[in-house]
Image (cartoon, rainbow, N blue to C red; front, side, top):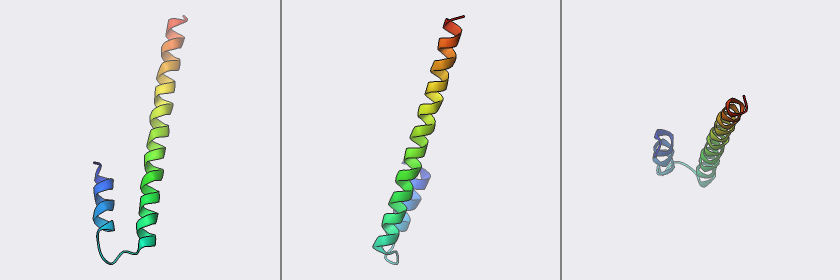
Amino acid sequence: MSVIQSNLKGICSRATITKEQQLMLMILQLQQALMLSILESKKKDKVIAELEAKLNQ
């Protein structure tokens, strides 16, 4: 579990936070995970393109 995930879990477990705030934190966490996934995918695509270019030389 990442530091951000554990921090969010700690925040969400406090009694002072509302359900709406919990949902917002969960949405932010999902957005972050999606962005990281997209970045990883783009990196892989770039590496594959570079390898294909070297093979085609």
